[in-house]
Length: 87
Image (cartoon, rainbow, N blue to C red):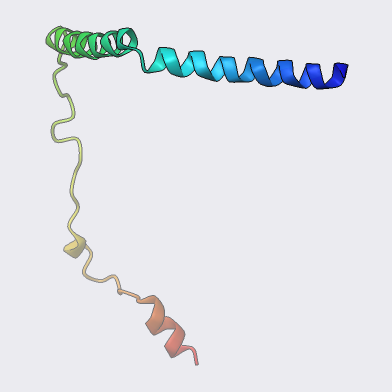
C-alpha cells in the first residue's frame, strides 16, 4: 500500500511540474516579456554597432603574386603521366 502511494505521489509531482511549466510558458506575461526582450536586443545591437571603432586596414599590398612563367627551364610534371611512364 505504501509503495503505491509513493508511486502516486511521484507521478502527481511530475504531472504538476509539467502543468505549471506549460502554464507559465504559454501565459500572456511570458509572451509579453519575450517580445520585449527581442525588441531590447535589437535596440542594443543598433546602439552597439554605432559605437564600434573601425580600424584602418594595414594589409594593403602584403601579398605578392608570383607568375608561374618566371622559371621557364623547369619541367612540369603531371602525376598520372609519371605513373604511366614507369610501366
